[in-house]
Every structure is written in C-alpha cells, then in structure tokens.
Image (cartoon, rainbow, N blue to C red; front, top):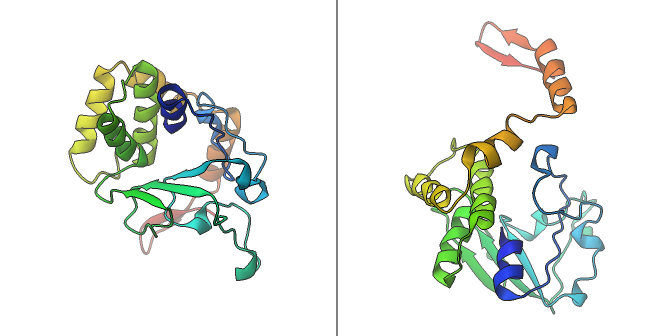
Length: 200
C-alpha cells in the first residue's frame, strides 16, 4: 500500500525488501525482494529508508545476530522514516509517525493517506484492507471500533473483502499449507490435567 502511494502520488521509485518470507497466500501483492536482507543492500544508493510496522532497528534484518557487534545498523547518511503502531516503538527514524492506538500499520497509513489528500481508488483500498485485515489477525486484535469504520470506508472505496482479501488468503490455502495442518492435527496431544492441546 505504501509503495503504491509513493509511486502513484509522489512519483518515487520504490524497492520493497523483506528478510522474512512472504506467505504464499499473499502472492497477489507487489513483488517483494526476499532474496536479499536489508543488511546486504547498499543503502547509500537510496534517498530514504522508509520502515513500516517495525518497532526497532533490530527487526529490520532477518539475519541472526551472532553478537551485538554484528547487529544491523542504519547508516547515518540515509534519511529514515519510521511509520508504526507498536507501543514499543523505539523512534529510530529522523521522522517518526507512531500511533500506538492503531491496531495495524495500514490503519496508520490510511490516516496518513487521508491527511495527505491521497485519492483512495479500488487498488489502494484493497491493499490497505488486506494490511488491516492481516495485521489484526482478521480483526482479533482490535483496539477500538475505528478499525471497523476504516474497513467499511475501504469497502466503500471499492475493496471487495470477500473476493480480494478473504478468498486469496483464507480460502486459497496451498498444498504445503494443508499438508502442514495435516501434520499438526495428526500429532496433536491433549493435556487432560490442564485441559489444553499442543503439538511439537
């Protein structure tokens, strides 16, 4: 969603990078370079580093930290923007926009888009709704009723919740995903004393 805003409305060139693997059920979103970790990129070739939904610099790199000296650090000469909703955010950017009352990073991004006067078309509405839906665990982690108003607003802008969000994520599980669930349920154990189920 942020890439879409920056490219369409700000005429920026944006590269998306994630050290974490993107779930196959989200393969319909923009291509993310998952082959490189941020620590492998020459950030001096960029005008800015925009971090979204990351509460600390240590979360930016997915590489294991052998010792404190090898931990990823943002170079001093790159302007860093930090957009987040976590109460634990460390305000590591030169520009920080943190709203800990928001339930998702895309809720924060929607507020910014409205403030900037961005025209929210069907594509942007779908991207934002997907982000809100997944970041809140399909509305399990909600902090206020605002998130439902935001979801309703995005649906009014053309996002099709059932077809564009639910269907590709929930109802289009991959064979590997189904095999994994089969393995989990086949090995499920019940602790009758404390009444909980577990699998290892």
